[in-house]
Image (tube, rainbow, N blue to C red; front, side, top):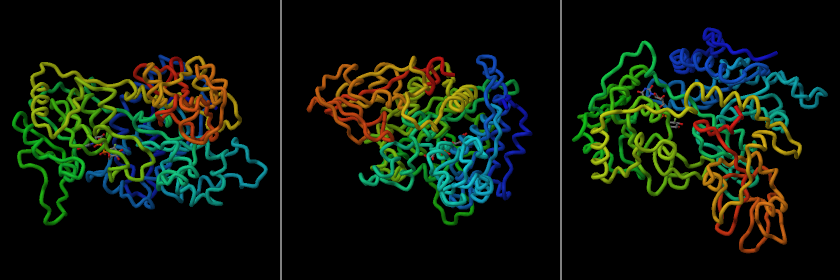
Length: 548
Ligand code: U2F
């Protein structure tokens, strides 16, 4: 059976039913409804650009572990009370995308439902172990969901821990999982095993919210924007700034970000400040942290928030939340984002929020994607304690005559549909034989021997290419190192994230022993890493040219 594009939202709503009426899906349903006209239009437009025929209809299970009762996170309960929404944005857009692409969807959020579906699998020792007979082709879940698999699917994680079946999994993982943290035995031996890490999946099975590292797959989300909608009235942009922080605690100083009151005071001296802060009226004796001059609208629904963004010239970052969707929405609506710079950078080493997250990534600002991929004139990354710099930046923005919206293609509805379709059609984590990678094709890939002390992520980027870990296996040999310019009489095999490499001190070629540790990140002063680098489509960095 082939996948046929389907734009009937009511059919999707039938699949998106709350298992126990906790209203867990309420926010997701609202977002999908609001964005559907744009999503359907994008689907049709993509269909005109590329051939969408002949794709096999896949049975896809989407299990939202974060909304389950067992997670204990109260995501469902707090979705209209200032709780985290970034993750719900991502799940909404994933569900919409998969449905539009014409696949058969099943959506669950409680472990019992999951067990009900997956326990129909053939028993572990049954003769019919072929994947063709599994009730699903692909499973999207998160790490909480993955734990539920391990616990609740009959026979424990048994069937799914087998390479054959765990290769069906795609883990929605906002901040990413680095190979060193993913391989349990390695993480344990190096004392970096965290509660989130050690999942022993292939690193590209983790799907991130921003293109953090090419070791994982970049899934992203859609930046909501209604500027060109026919029913949207053009609003005059006012001398107004909106603060990014929907909870009161985000406005308070913490160990790492200080001076927020003085920062806001100086902005206030130049422009009117607005907020969308959820005020918990039940909390007794609470002293409020929001300055009295702020015009607080309370938490807003999507439409009203977007109207406010279109009226504002500036969107003010407070240092938290990290890497959310809202700054991209602000920029897409024509506001300029003030992005607090972090010096020293925030990471799992010094920040409570990142502690235990399976990544060593260092955030040089509240929103590194906005800092590195967008930049001025859409984003100003500044030290918020430097009052003069804050003043100058705000004045510069206010003196502009025009405010241009910007939205990278990869964050449009069409960009997300194109990217996810390419992943579904081409990624295959169930290929276990040692054979050359088939996707992205060789024609898109170049092998580059990096400079000493440079990671593959950076070595490829310096040549305007992107590291592609799926091709490491093809160059993991002394011969490949020699062909790329290394001069080594000897070679040896090493387990670690830095190989294949040329060791400039010992003059040895060092190849990788453990395939799960192939990694684009990681650098060493003595090593020149050998890197698989691929080209990319401008605005759609996850895909190579011609790989749509
Ligand atoms: C991020 O999660 P957040 O929920 O804090 O992300 P935000 O950028 O604040 O926004 C998420 C959505 O909430 C919407 C807004 C965004 O689409 O339009 N919203 C709204 O509807 N009404 C309002 O008044 C204010 C916002 C990040 F995404 C997560 O991955 C992280 O876990 C979290 C902590 O770093 O930050």
